[in-house]
Amino acid sequence: MVPVRFLIQSLLMLSALIIPVLSFAVTPDCSYSTQVITDEYNFDVSTRPLDSCEKQSFKIAVKTNANPFALYESETGTILERAWAEDLDDDGHYELFVVSRKASEPSRKSLEMFYLEGNALKRIHLPEPGGMSGYRGGDRFVTGWGRIIRTFPRYLEKDLDGEPTGGEQQFVYQYRNRELLLAAEPEFSINEHSGAKPAAKSRNTSAFKVQSIEVRKEYIEIKADAPIENYKIIRISEPWRLIIDIPGAVSAISERTVQIGSHNVSRARIGAHKGFLRIVLDSTVSPLPTETVTPLENSLRVSFFKLPGK
Image 1 (spheres, helix red, strand yellow):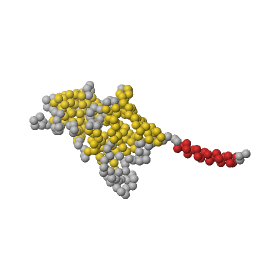
Image 2: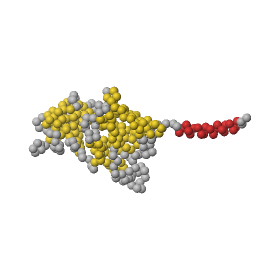
Image 3: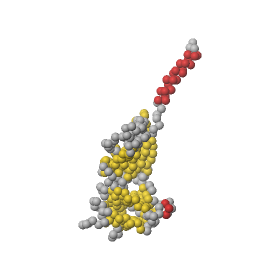
Image 4: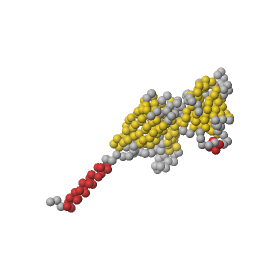
């Protein structure tokens, strides 16, 4: 007959062997799920671990009017952190951006971009530049105006992790013809304009409406139902275009495109963004002539200096 003491000791030893095995088999919680909604498509972005955080199933389901439109599936070795959409090149179609990190190196992050070609979702990796000395992660990404800007702190050799003293390094990528190219420096300029009174104080929080874009002999006029006190002017090359961002505005124009055909401008494209309305004037010449934007009562007048021979 087996002594009771020996039996208890045997059971304790067996449980000590089983418990670690069971705990090791628990699936790590590093899944991700979000929905990115635009006025064109909805992107359902998700990941789930296959056997670890370093091996996950990555899925993007694209829907339009609640109907399936495109599907992207792959395996990934990173953990997703954030996803958003932006019409990066102002062509009227949104691109999807996803930031992720490695489980073993959480401070080192990467960005990938997706765009639709027909009903297929295409993936673009952000090119890795040279000159990465002093890099230990801490990446930040900003998208807009046909560019992706990547910034991270630089570490000197004796710096402790989390205590960089080498300033910041910045890389700028241009998005052209479905490619991301490393730029030597930004090729865009931004001018901020505001009236004497901040918009938040001069009217209530409800949005005002841009009612029309009209072509006159000497200028192009953007008319609204309230004063346009704040706006941002952005000039972008290749192709040349003038962008006017109007915070707090929405469009009352039924079409997304207004034909101009004058003042070296082919058309105006209208896009709704979170918190502002964007109007893009596409140039018919290169470079785009210098503009003058004049705020009047409930309107903006946009005129261009005439070029010799034009």
